[in-house]
Structures are given as structure tokens and as C-alpha cells.
Image 1 (cartoon, rainbow, N blue to C red):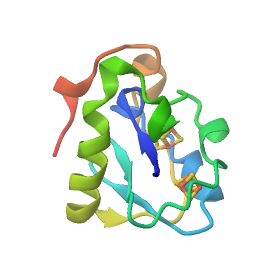
Image 2 (tube, rainbow, N blue to C red):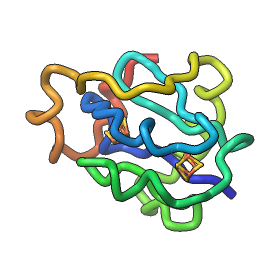
Image 3 (cartoon, rainbow, N blue to C red):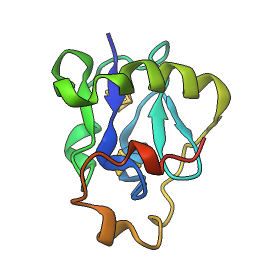
Length: 107
Ligand code: SF4
Ligand code: F3S
């Protein structure tokens, strides 16, 4: 089991989550972070850090976002690790409460 970054992160990418991860398992795309499920130790530290509540334990991913579980595994293999917090995307506040943003994902 692992934690999963889901839809609310898309187009926001606040990166507060990165600062607390003890095993550096976040990977960065243009407008989403994902978690490498092979490395995540399910410590539970990152979900409360996310301003968009985008991170779930795998068993708690909402039904309408379950495609993000496979997406985290797939994209973690393609994207580079990110280990330091950086500025959120410029329009993060505007997109924070928008739902179903998968169509906006840049791969
Ligand atoms: Fe890192 Fe823990 Fe979050 Fe997994 S649950 S991504 S190990 S902070
Ligand atoms: Fe994304 Fe939340 Fe981290 S918006 S980058 S999962 S702090």
C-alpha cells in the first residue's frame, strides 16, 4: 500500500507535501506531483500538509479518482524526484477548488 496524489493537485502543485516525506518519494511533472508507490512507507505525514487535500491513503482514494492510483505508479517511473518545496503554480489558488482536472494534466 502507498499514498496517492489525486485530482486536486492538478494545476496547483503546492509542494508542501515534499517537505515532510522521510523517504523522498515524490516525483514532479509540469502540473502534478505523484508518489512512487514502491518507495512510500505509508507514514501518513503528507496528507495534512496539502492545501488542496489531494493526498489519500490508497484504500481511501475517492471512487471518482481511483484512476490516479495507476497514474502515480506510471508517472513516478517517468518523472524526476522532487525533494524540496518550491513555489506553487501561478494559478494554484484559482484551480484549488476546481474538480475533475485530469483533462488539464500535462504528461
Ligand atoms: Fe512520503 Fe509518508 Fe507521504 Fe508516503 S505517506 S509520500 S512516505 S510523507
Ligand atoms: Fe500537490 Fe498538495 Fe503536494 S497540491 S504538490 S499534493 S501539497
